[in-house]
Image (cartoon, rainbow, N blue to C red; front, side, top):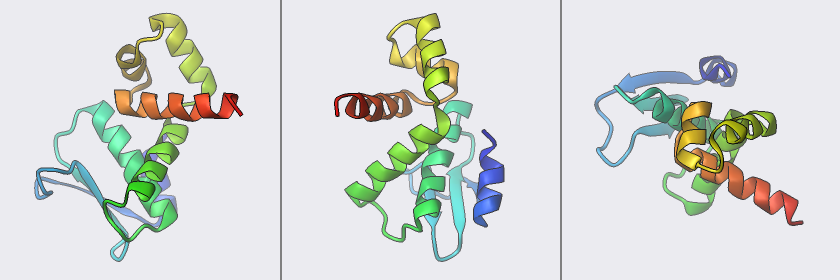
Length: 125
C-alpha cells in the first residue's frame, strides 16, 4: 500500500517535522491540505499514523480530537492497511498475538486491535 500515492491522489502534501505538539505524532490540517508527521517515527508507527491522517483527509475533517472522527479515522486506517488474507496469514505464523501480528503486517498493535474489533462486529451481526 503506497500511502504517498494515496496522499497525492487526495491532493494532500505530507511534511515530516519536529514541530508537532509533544502529544501528537501526526496531524491533518484540512484548510491547508497538509498532513504533518513527526520526524523520526519507526516504520510501523509512521505507516499507522499516516493512514490515520489520510482518513481525516478522506473525510475532510476540520475538527481535531472529536471522539467520533478519531474512531472513524482509526477504522478507515485499519481497513486500508490490513486485509483479511494478510491478517489470516500473520495469525497462522504468530498465533493470536496482536504485537507479533502487528509487526508482521507493518502496523502498530492499536491498528490490529481496531481491525479485530471491526471484524468481530461484522461477524456477530
